[in-house]
Length: 284
Image (cartoon, rainbow, N blue to C red):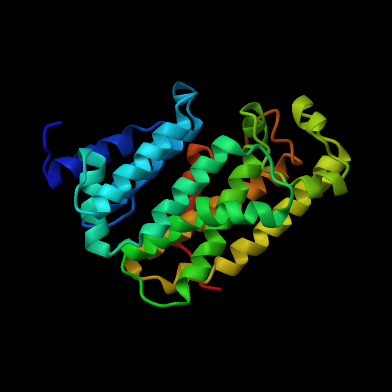
């Protein structure tokens, strides 16, 4: 494999990030000087997530994730291979990124290839601790945000974002063979996998979604102070992220918890309104 320069590696990660079908709007409001590092981290995580999810990797998922971890270890030794890891290696050095954050992400992606359901809320939160929380902590590191009080606030927001996505995608995930709604809560509300398979919006399902949304809103509220404590260069992005995630819960409520007929999502007009609200944000 021909060697690539750091500049070429960062450009490759940016192109990969911008081209990905799920990308909106990674790096759009990030200061130009920090964007290459955000793109490098995103490219690393996005590729690994694709190994766990995309049909093309069926039968190769564990092997691809194991190979990805070996390449990560090599990058930490200063032996980066390929453009994503050359860019990532520079990012690791520049910001002293703890290896465990990236290993936690890979652990969560592996879990998605092995585990189809979650018995309890606590079990799901452990998954979010590894699948979502490292992302927020990586952002704090790249933006060089000091303070031991910030990571727990970031964790609350990132877990809430992950949960909101799970409730939004309950039908999509079920079609992929995964159920993130905790089994004990389903049982308490009289909901079964049959309801998911039929897209049945019963009173039990509405009650279940109401409880899930309430628990998730509490996490958003716990993390909200982060939006006012980070530095100016990160503040708008953080507020927009918080508003976007919490408003998905509003969307789910607006359709009575029916995530089966149509996936609740933001329109272009909604996104413009969210940006305006982030710009006009008032600290609590």
